[in-house]
Length: 437
Image 1: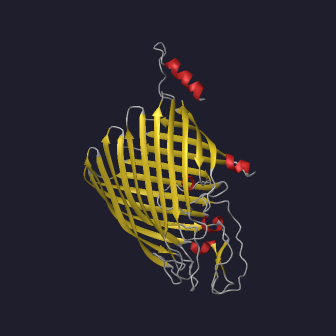
Image 2: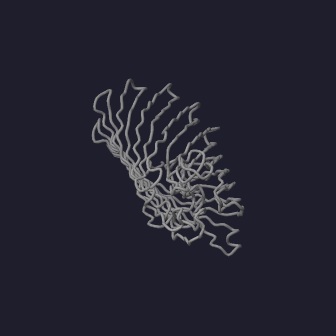
Image 3: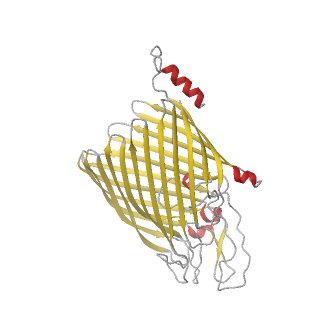
């Protein structure tokens, strides 16, 4: 495909040929070689050379009042080391993105987005940002789907509203809990829960923001969101301290109410920022201990364009999310969720018209609520210290011509955790070429 695209570019360079107008559809394919020094994201590293093939196709229809798009990306990853060990050497992933913007008139607008990811890597399953329910790789065709719809209404020149609804759906293939009596009431956390039992869920949220526009550069808002988490795994995930009574997935069902206030401001033509702070009240209505809890909420970001095509983004978020941890304390309380503080930043720099570099960094600090954990969790009994997750990505890309580009990059991931079998460190290096038409 790369050879064909290069030849096509040579033909279009001829002055006698007029390039076609931008098309509604486009296709591309990326071929990369890589080295992954911990492809299982395990405590004990196993590295492998490999090859990635990732074709993609998209359509985009722009009408007078509507913009509609659909994109599908397929990933195929071959690992030499796994083949040498007579293991399954191939990983496959799928990602489907849908977006719709429609203006009914000058005052009423609707935005719809949906992202479906199927695969093994955490960043593919959870694309919502913040803490990840499972920060490490998981075998199988695991599913994460994230749907959002928002209706924006400009009632007056100074006052507008944003009514929104979202749905996050998770389905992990790792199912089948294994619990057997330990005979030791002092150590009830025997057996093992599956990720399907712990995390399969249908998470719905709805809310309303009231917005005041003081001037074209400044907007203040106040909002409310109701979040309903329904765990659908239907499996045993823990056992009570009596060493007999089972705890099931539904134990962690919850209703969360969030209130926040915020401000968006355009400081200059190339500097903008937004801040939203508030509180979240969670009712874990099926739990026997630690049913009600309060936690802080925040979302702050700053964007600065310092040169054409070159910009910096930094931000911080604070909120709650699901967790793969399920620890029971001496009173029978179970880990309900984790509170995650996320600090992130990125730099995109255009060295020349064809050469672009980027650096992305992220730090996530997650403490556990309930189950006797420490560092922000409730209950007694020692428990787990907070998890800390580090991420870094560096990429350099060069546009050879209109249809062909190449890139080289490096990704670093680390999870610091005292939960048995969870901590890992991972380095990935890659170089590749992309053909687009």
